[in-house]
Image 1 (spheres, rainbow, N blue to C red):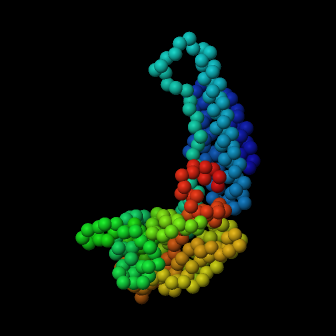
Image 2: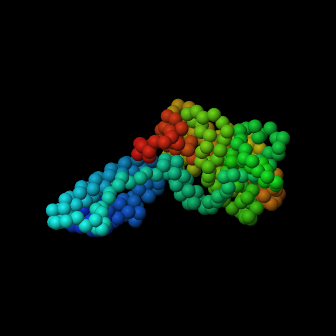
Image 3: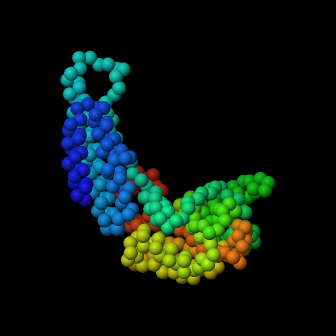
Length: 330
């Protein structure tokens, strides 16, 4: 906070000493650019405690708005002074400095950035996969053949395909990239696969039909359920604070055995946040990995649901409504 106070004083001096629009533009870049101290402070917020993160983030944003206003006022003053000196208008001359309101990261993007930071510190790689996926990778190799009842757990959109690629689906989970990664990498490895997924389901205040999911996969010798539990507890407490109440309960997923679901205590109730378990031996075989030698765990959670909890939203659907104010309000 002391650094922000010092920066505020320095900004006022620097702006007041800018006698030309070019000099003022240079001051703007120094104070508000990507490599500015304000940007550095905002980028480092994720390393602070939840309480300090709110205080420093709010103070830094207030300072940024004050600096923007000071630059705008100085730009207007310079233009007035310039008009007083001009005897004619040169239409070929570049226009005056235009100071626009800075943008905001979307709340879900903020969460994703924090997630990347946490997992990278834990040694995870970050992978990607196609949003339009084959039935083979989305279902078959994840232990869900065509007649498997588990397919009814996820209402699915279908896309017209031809030949060996039919049918195609907008992926219902980023778990679809598990086999793709296993086919190209040998254990041991740790990886997350973030991306948008699609479900043909009704929306309500805690569910939306398209959302960002983060899939995690760890494979190696001796990987156990205790490793899964320790990893997910660490992630939840990193995101929501050390006092976050988390519970694990038995569940069922066709691609993990045993399987669990993870709930977080939110607004006087348990809210489902994550699913996971030990990777099914058949899924490992489909990825070309010997389940007699290696074991692994997998998990997946929605980034939008994490935003919903962190920012205390009443309705998750506001995150994807056409309202630019949502970035400011959270």
